[in-house]
Every structure is written in structure tokens, then in C-alpha cells.
Amino acid sequence: MYRILMTVYMNRSRCQGGMFLRASLYYVYLNDWLKVFPHHQVMVIKAENYYEHTASVVKRVFRFLGLSQPTPELMEAIGSSLPINTRRHDPDRSLEPMLPETKTLLDGFFRPFNKRLAKLLKDPRFLWENE
Image (cartoon, rainbow, N blue to C red):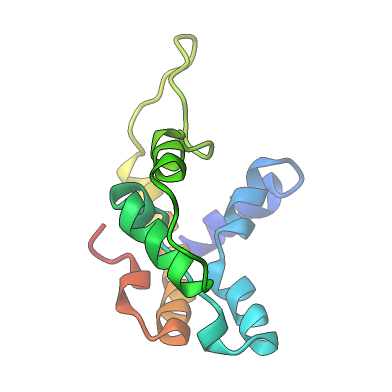
């Protein structure tokens, strides 16, 4: 199964699609950052948490950075902005759910990286096991 996904990955890496797999290996990038910056100077936020609890996450980020809390106007602007990294509905293109086989392949591919990430960050939420 892993070999199949890696074959797809290697073939897709020649085009833009393969970049999404590489860019999703968060452990690789964060591990490099944490070799340069102390752990207490790096804040990692799950996008799901940001989109579900935008106001509280933004306030935490401002506190982390030592900034005064955002104004209500800024919070309104942030809260009303739309994510740019999501699939948008296109009437000419089917947006069917992911096939179970694809999810199984991706889960298997990302599992070792997610385990390392959760250990690096000392946070089991980054295992993405119950999502």
C-alpha cells in the first residue's frame, strides 16, 4: 500500500499536485525550525482549531507575540475573511467525498510523520487519529 502511494507521490511530484503531500509533512519543517528557535518561541496552531474558534485563537496569538489585544474592528475583519486554502464549489467539477481506499492510503502515509510531530510538540492532537 505504501509503495502505491509513494509511486503516486513520485509521479505527481513532477506537477503541482505532488507538492501538497510534501507540504503536509509538518514534522519535517517544524523539526528544522525547532533546531533554530527555542520551543517556547514557536506557536503551532491546527487550522481546524483556528476555523472553529477564530476569536480565541487570534487572541492567543496576540498574547504569544506580546501584542496588545486586537481591536473589535480587526477581529471583525479577521472573522469575516474566508479561508483561501479550501476547495471551492465549481459547477463544472464534481466534489465527491474521498474514497475510503484513498483515506486509508493517506492515513498510512502520514501516520509515522504525525507520530513524530505529536512527540516533537508533546501534543497528541497532532496524531489526527479521531478525525
